[in-house]
Length: 248
Image (cartoon, rainbow, N blue to C red):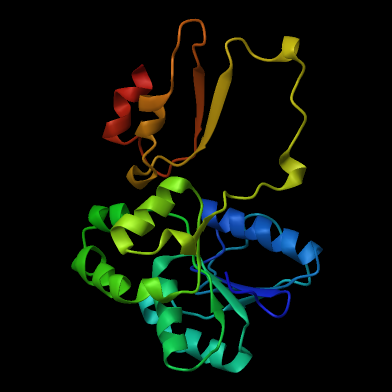
């Protein structure tokens, strides 16, 4: 993978509100800043305070003032042309495509390192609009593969990028989401652990999260039954596909 000359990175994402990718970006930005990196976070908009606490003073946060990746091309190009970042990490496909076009136009000479946080093919198939189901994937297939390297958060996403989008596996690194050390605690002693063991899931019940697979593949072997406790952070009612699973 190409290396940046300086210890600096620019993260680009939609917004810095609540969400898994936003949480990971916040954790990663704080960790890199503590290690001497110059970190800049560029968001398209910011309608609410940062959900995960203030960023370090050394982390720069820039808001472009647009709502969607497809309308970000002009303000993002202006930012790239003015500041000339060395390493740019977009967190969604649309922004990776926009940055590919900006670099191809000669407005910046940066290393492009997209971070893949979802399976794009499944996401596009689940959308209703013609733009998201047909047009956006066609543009992505023509441009997304031109980045320098890619980060997938799991092996399944790496395979999806290789099989669905034709990206060479050697150009994809699997790097799981980081966890802030302040949230880690030593495991309790054996006699203090729950019997049977419990798995706590905290998240959102969106179809593209494919959480039904969690229920489907949890192993139950003899005495090693696994009790699953779920804390659900949902914006609406439980999806129909979860109704039967939640009763088992």
